[in-house]
Image (tube, rainbow, N blue to C red; front, side):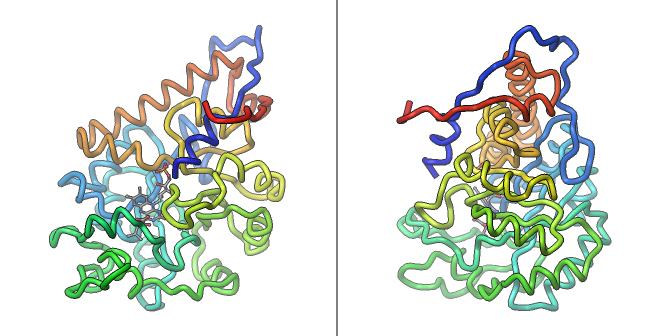
Length: 328
Ligand SMILES: Cc1cc2nc3c(=O)[nH]c(=O)nc-3n(C[C@H](O)[C@H](O)[C@H](O)COP(=O)(O)O)c2cc1C
Ligand SMILES: CC(C)CC(=O)C(=O)O
């Protein structure tokens, strides 16, 4: 988790000068949609844990900002409630042991007007989260996975030593047998654009393209899964090369401001997903707090583009970068 931030910090930008940036714009396309800034909100579970309105407040902020909102399969408000905010909504899915429930969720996402499906591929099981274990993390009874019906409630018996309640619950639900054949099956059962989230190796990015995926997300899950996995700012360029323009490449994990977004673009990304900062805004100030976070990142990006001599997103993607040695 720490290395994600450090890796972005180590990227150095080579600004261009005497470029007319008076009419600059960060408008571009992301997840197949026109967006005012190249970012979307990352899928994050159980947002009513942070604020009573949860995902509905966060999605309202995304709607105001005009950026897509990815609703977690483990959201504490339903995909229908989220889509009703008017935000361009992407449904995130985990591979479930219960294939009937998985199919049902795909159908609900389509019926709710979702613009894409995002399959998260880096959670065959939940990472060993030592702070969750030491703190005895247990969901409050009123925070449930609202999309999963009876399967979305908590567990009566917590998993025991070495397992948090959340890890035990997801262990019951998630199927660790996901393979590329299953990805091909998912591709075949929906006409919605398909996003694969949690790619780090360029060979996996090439396999995703071969499976007909529309977007890959270079992600180590914000450092929550495999401790010691490569930072995304380090992994991104090789994935961009492997994909070679055949699908969109988004990146998350460690993006904390507009300069990080500019660095991601300079490294070849189509755009970024914003994770924890959105939750901090939501916890501090509900929909307004989440909206302020998205505003700030957008303002910072516009300023950084001006200072780097970038009138548009394509020129940002052509900026040169270098990597500084050591930590700051
Ligand atoms: C509290 C929390 C819950 C998350 N829940 C999910 C989830 O349900 N599905 C998913 O694909 N990723 C989930 N993630 C990972 C995020 O989508 C994203 O990859 C990560 O937070 C990006 O890193 P950042 O927080 O450093 O920006 C979660 C992250 C956090 C912090
Ligand atoms: C409920 C969890 C599976 C959500 C998640 O992906 C996470 O906590 O990182």
